[in-house]
Image (cartoon, rainbow, N blue to C red):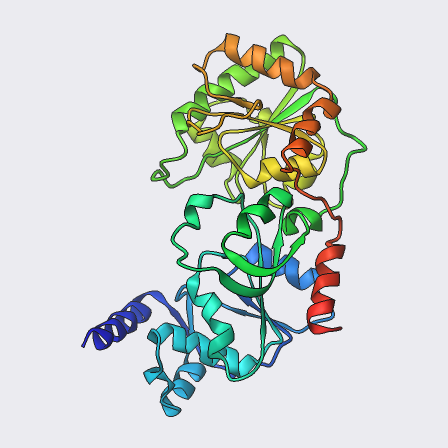
Length: 357
């Protein structure tokens, strides 16, 4: 009875939420499982010699061809949820050699290997900083064929929860963009904005960012530094200026690659822990955190004292004059230095080893 209830619940959820399509999925070498459009695009550009398909696993899209096939073969009665059986049937049509995800928390993904009728390899790509408390719900070590991770430190944590081969490649997205340091300004710093148009994010305090930008602008004027604010992707300068009434000359829209924008600055300022901080360091750019959030272990590059001009001035001056050698030695000692592999050469090599040309 409970299983029928779950099926009915998923059915009605799909009707009201999903986009319905009808086509026979083409066979592919690689199937991308539950990734964002940016990551999908970069993988396709990186692995041009392979046929690549995408499966959306959050009910964004339902392929009715696969649904009909599932019903005719009575596979909807198989063990597992209705939607998981749909995912399995989708994979059976595509028959990829490799299924790749960047969502290491989706337990459905790790069941695919044993659920398919043929031998397939599965792999995961790390895309965000590792938070070990997110992995504590794993009841046993999960098996996969390869895990692409940022650093030695990340590998050591993931080894507790995954039984796999690890390949340290750094950030896949970061590696895609070549380093551009020729015009980097020695006296410049960049704030990565946390502003979003939705107001329900508990980790981002919009008033805090407004107050911080005021102090950062004052610092740049008083000490003759160039200062810019990089917006989140697809946030328009107009919307940001409605929220934060500052001179528009400080604003940089984020429509393409943020990485090569970071390359042009001496220091990156973050409001919280972020993948971009690790990626900046990998590209040879210092980063700091100025935040009201409390971390269990505050690193030397974190300021969460009272937000005022004096504290901001002292903190920024210290890091803007600190040599790169002394700054990066911290990450090397802690084995937290994210690798930088321009062009994702290591990633491409591992894919070739896994499934051939």
